[in-house]
Image 1 (cartoon, rainbow, N blue to C red):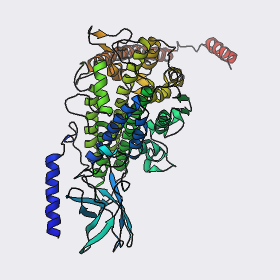
Image 2: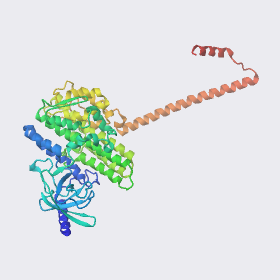
Image 3: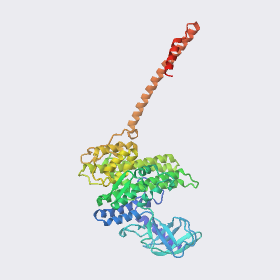
Image 4: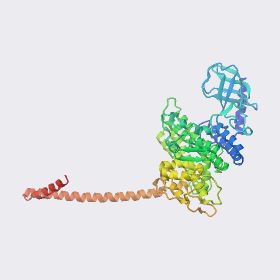
Length: 559
């Protein structure tokens, strides 16, 4: 029986490698250690399935329930099953124990325990391996894939201690196959996930705190989506998002963008912070570097997703894809950020930071890795700011070359960053671009100026954001040209270098003048001392009492 199991498993793995996509190899130049990176990236498939149902929702109410079910229960990432055992476990079973049983199509399916199970347990939860797909969760039945799911009943086999065991089991394939990683959970559990060790006594991560300060609660993204789903209202600390009169199209777009760029996008911060926390906590068993890098791998997976391609097509539906789409509008594509096609410069920059951070984690350089994390977070705001600026232009200028789009979703991701710099400006923009406020009262110049003014505070450059490019006339649209960087960090290295050279020359000149004046005064002082000594030697020197009394009298006036 063991030989048959081994042969079947080997054929399963071989078949999987021949048929499954290899889109994750290298993750755009990043090499992952985490064996579950593909499963992590599959969260973008949940988002895509939501998108398909939201397209139906734009036409009819029916698609809303299906979209929410995918959002709430997932389908493609971290698939688990809960089985009922006929006789219970014969012994305590540790986490990581593999169980095998027959799958729907006759292949041998493997799943493992994630926690310790006790002797006598008649219910067991197992995490499916990624060899074959078991995609059920909250997915509509027509897109479910149960090839890698256990049959409704059968025999589980597992090796334990010195023996092998067979256990009869049964379960409901409809309700027993679920997902432990969902888009909903990424925000719903924010109060725990966005703190070190998940402890309420610890503060929120610094960059996440900006959003908590603005919205007043940590699960703000989930609350926004819930309000949009139900045509309701999300009241928060600095305002409110009202969807009562919003169209289904506006609500669907808002849900899609918030799920992608706030639920999933912000969860990247958690994985980066977890990587740093594992780097800082030195361990004794020697595998902490791997644990830290696994956290970074997860961040990369959530940034890219499983739908992004290497051809810069912008097909990815997470932050990587957004950046590639935005660079075409703002002429920030290419390694130098001066093209209108290709990979976004910000994606080049972020992956440079990803790879440097990986190297720093490997070498226990936690301070340097912290700087990488900070740069990544700042860079991630660039496509969000671009998306908001593009939406503002569409709304205020009503250009025929653009589709009508709701700016609320992008403003939701940008306003807390702006509020951290100047709350007054953030509140003013929020009043005009939150759901329920369909007409902007501010003009384009004023809105753009409010954003441009705070780039340095937000850690981005004018050149990072670019300007809205008119491909037809090969120029920037009116009032949308890039602002001019005044922050040295943002200026070309040659300009900064020249300024430093000029500064050094000026300082040298000042030092030379100061040295000359000091030398002159010193020589004058020495001559005076010598003159007085000669006068004392010849008896010609007299103490000037009148001058001293005069000085004393003046000092008395200010005593």
